[in-house]
Image (cartoon, rainbow, N blue to C red; front, top):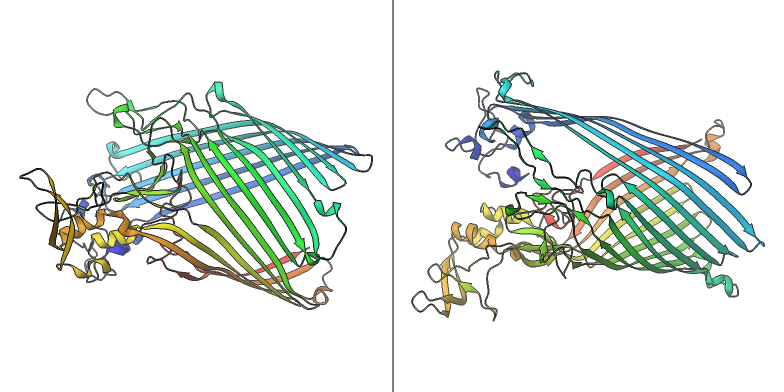
Length: 626
């Protein structure tokens, strides 16, 4: 996407081949590895592909021993085989070793087996008390094996094969990952007259991915609720009312192979030998622990025509296992650590209503809204800031701050003195940017999120639509940063005009800072070296509303199905998704995520770099019930 966004407007991107079939280069006079590949060349000559065959199966058996005791056993498997292929054709603008071609192929086999045995006890005492006890054990076994082969510098340019390379340019590797977990758990539930409900659970896991002294960990929970409308006279206003509270802990093991330190090798350099792996292991890792406390209420009025559900919660995560960057002086780039304490506190509210309810027509509406405030209570050691995500741009980064926000943004800024005066260069007159990217500039967490769903039913027809909305929260527009660097943004329309800055500058003669006003030219150097290094220029406070889905369905009358007794119901549905976006964001889509959902830590939401908008979709479906 970067090459598409920054491609020169005066060059026809569709012309990616010369008349003789050779590559049409954008900048033929510079070294190939510094040139930019045409997007059409990438699509047609450098394809990436994957193919997966997957099998998912499950089986269970239930044995009723007595009227109050039964046993259930479940077995589940998930097995898939994936083939990955990546081709770099000769002549591509890549590093020198791949300019004559590169082919990489990986075969990955994954197998997951889950076994679960549950013993269920249920008994009613004196008609008013109901008790149930669940005791169980579970095991998980996952195994992944990857075989990879890579060939570089093709001997025959047009022959695509791993064998089409000299032996010294052929590489193979194998990776094996295995994880096992055994869990033992119990769940005790008591209720009285369907008025008071109490529950207590406990679970102990033993995980292979933790060091021996920390492999076993226990986490409990307690919850209770009171249906207070059972204690008051029945009425037509308050139909149902419940208060609830809960406290729970959840434990989590580590990713595989984080406790040991490994080596690369053997090296093919003079003397051979081995070298350190990128990441340093930690044989003192502890399991992650998340503790949550929740209070809530649920009420329904007017015989269920109006209702709401309200929840307040606080969740504290301790000893999160992450792999941040460390000082190169350690001999490693990354190190697995337990990262301190993160607290999330917020509210959730849901309001539902049925404004119209007739014999053949009804209108139902539901509003959901939530607010969360994520705070870093402490970081490991004396770190003031932690980059626990893979999202890093040249002037802005996703970051978490000690004693501050979890979903923050840090970046370079124009320097100021203690009085807020802009620091200027005495000779050039330009503002002086910071060299580090550690200054807090924004919070990606929204003020609140929500959704509004409307559903209309008329006889066999149903029409519904869902609006999603977000208020507040910062988005870093990395796309605009890139366009500004290339002189393609509207920000650079005033290039070569003059601009004045007032601030303080250090007099080289006296060595003291003096108030000055400097007039400079907004040249290419100004935009590339000064303007883009003030990251707050590209930070936007964003609101949006999206028409997430629209659906129209029709249930066939039962008289139409009378001839097929084996068919209970049939419904035809047409659905559209992501059909409309209303936003104040200047980029393409404020909901974009630079690195997708797979990144670690605080994720990449709120960081937009050459992102693409959500795909609009349309589908027609048929649902049959037998």
